[in-house]
Length: 154
Image 1: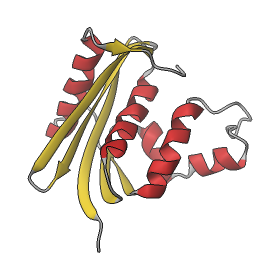
Image 2: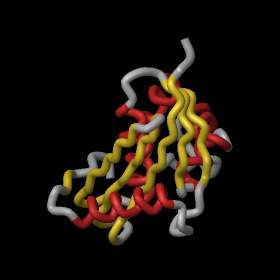
Image 3: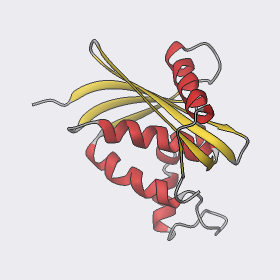
Image 4: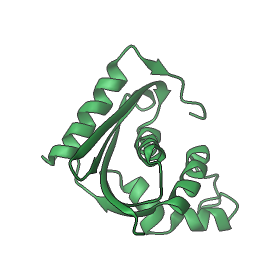
């Protein structure tokens, strides 16, 4: 049986960096659409970009084939340029021998990427892509809402 194929768009936003932040995600499967968002009290833009992807992939109930669009080079390159593999080999140190930032979230990615076949695609932010713009709206609205939670690890 073949895996379900779906498309996911994600974005993170931070009002100040660090500051209040939020993420937005749009999951598209055939005619189905689901939107996710959450705001955080104090976080960073990179953490929100990462949390958007983690939330979207966690939402999937079975292994899927995913085309994931992000405007974050940080998130995309961690996988397409194999940064995460090198960080793990080097004991979670960068090439400059410094501790990898956001290790807690990278560790959440690993089992999700083992479960799902994810192809990362970069989309230029704020360039008119309707789904990327929707994710940005979701993220900004979440960051501005009264429903902010603590970003453990930030």
